[in-house]
Image (cartoon, rainbow, N blue to C red; front, top):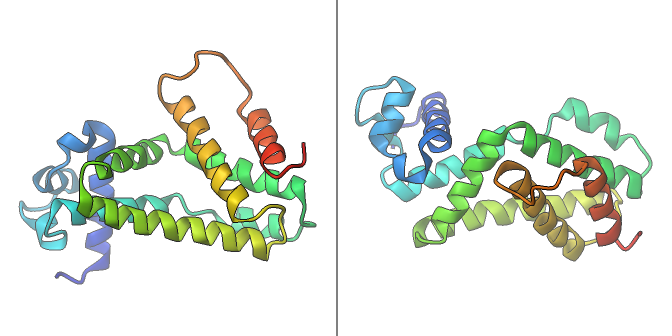
Length: 190
């Protein structure tokens, strides 16, 4: 397997662009090569199978959606509690909606994983790691709620983001207000 991490990242980013533009059906090794401006066969040297390519895209999405330490540092200095948790969740929603191409690509990958056992295994592992990290972060920060509340928040935020990025309820609402209500209700503080 080629060991050039910069090239791997370049290919993954090109793959995300293809996925966002053409969906899972348009994502091929050849399309990734073309989008990256690289010779045919480069992507297949890095990602031997379609599942490996799709799994790498899932990992790259989470890298690109990772929180900015400059935003997290001032939050970490605050007193733990419901208001702080609400601000953390607002920041998650802001990141997901601020990069719609990445969020839509993740939704596309999750749907594709429902039909592809190899991708299901790869993407499930990535999603579990993210969930476990969220639970650990919440506990280490002294925030309200435990694993079950974090799971419910994931479900609620996924639905909120889906409603914002796809044809939704058709009724206008304040995303920040809805996010705050979700946090309060799911942590039994409202």
